[in-house]
Image (cartoon, rainbow, N blue to C red; front, side, top):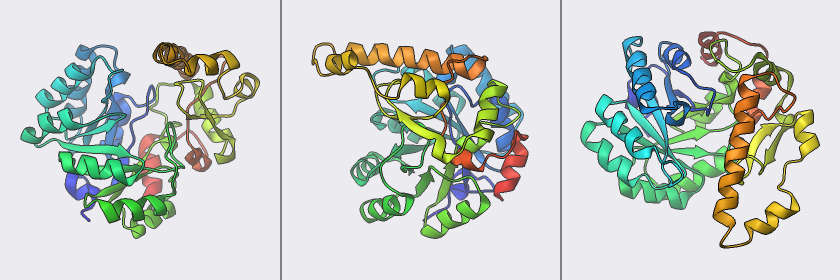
Length: 312
């Protein structure tokens, strides 16, 4: 299979994964100028104007390709149509789609030569996006941060490669040079790495959040349904231990009501995202910090370029 660096015309087969609230313009520039690709969630920008300004700034301060945008492609993202329009107009290098069908994204991007990679956690969806014309799949394994998959990298590679001919990018659990080598030896076309970049100097999150990624490890990562209603990984801080990681009895009952389920999930998502945002940018005892098991390899708060160098 083709390596992802050949597909994107970058030096190394690594993508700095899109991280909600964490990834910013400066991180994108530093990553791309270090020879890797980088992706930022479109939802990290409050307005389309800010979004387009950021894309243009990244372009003006980088010399390589590898500028990616993460789009949430389900109905919950009311900004999707305009975000996609901006991506096509400004001709970003690639798009990573999450949580829905990439059909419209692929149809709009193909004529412009914009690559589309799709998050998958199993072979059935990988086959579907291949039929739609995706350029690669991102195999989200059980060690990923955020909304993780259920299988190991090896299990995912075996089952997807048997059913799909697209390049397969591994996402989850990698934070060392040795880990990258092992993943590539399995046969993956590249690696998407997120959590090891949280504690970079360029991130605009709180110093407490960064230090938590240094102080805690993979054994401190737990799943919670309190953020979005779907299991999501967070650091098991005293506050998380105090509040628990599952919905209360009333939320569980309401979630089973067909008429109310959608509204309960929306309220849960709104409250959860607010708590995550507050914890990410300020010092608060309500510490709900999203991260994956690969913070195990974070030993200090470093310049992003140094983090990349440690991978090579």
